[in-house]
Image (cartoon, rainbow, N blue to C red):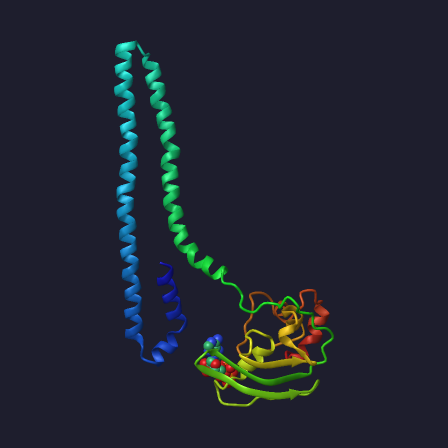
Length: 261
Ligand SMILES: Nc1ncnc2c1ncn2[C@@H]1O[C@H](COP(=O)(O)OP(=O)(O)OP(=O)(O)O)[C@@H](O)[C@H]1O
Ligand SMILES: [Mg+2]
């Protein structure tokens, strides 16, 4: 179910790409495959459930028969009182309630675990980029950025940046110009350490950013993203997102700077 949902979500998000590349048939086949897997798993679960529930019913009925049969025999032979047999039958029905409940609970748990598996896999994924044990906080940044023979690739076979070196002095504006997909956004993301360079160093005010704490590094960078993302809430909340304690006055002051009227 999780796999089928994941595939459907992928396809709906990338529907433009699928249509542009004419891959509708291929994607339909993939969804069909997962759908059949889901149906197979559902049938299997129904089969187990069809065996399990009647078995529980059968065992509970067997209990009643045993009490009535054996109790009747004892009443006949040793003079067991009828009230005791009736009381026993009542106890037995009280006992079966929770047992059936437990069986249903087990089934619900199995169903929930199927969904939880995917969620837990995501939650348990360790973050690749961590602070080094010797990391120090980056303080009072002037904004001197230097790339020292930096190379980077998302996957080992396709290099994105190869031996990039440049220096940007504090207060200067630097434009990276190039065709789409050349690695401009990637380069800016390396400065915030969303990825580690495969070779070379990035320095801020002369400090190698791999040796400073992630929190202090990201606190001194204000990215303006290519794809604007607005959080649910007011415009003021979105402008003040990085500084939760910002007052309304400070948010207003920030507006002209961010070219918002
Ligand atoms: N998260 C990612 N995983 C794998 N490859 C990626 C990822 N992000 C980008 N790429 C690839 O890395 C290359 C550089 O992408 P990047 O987004 O940095 O380019 P860009 O210069 O910013 O392009 P644009 O001008 O379109 O914004 C592209 O080939 C892109 O497909
Ligand atoms: Mg880009």
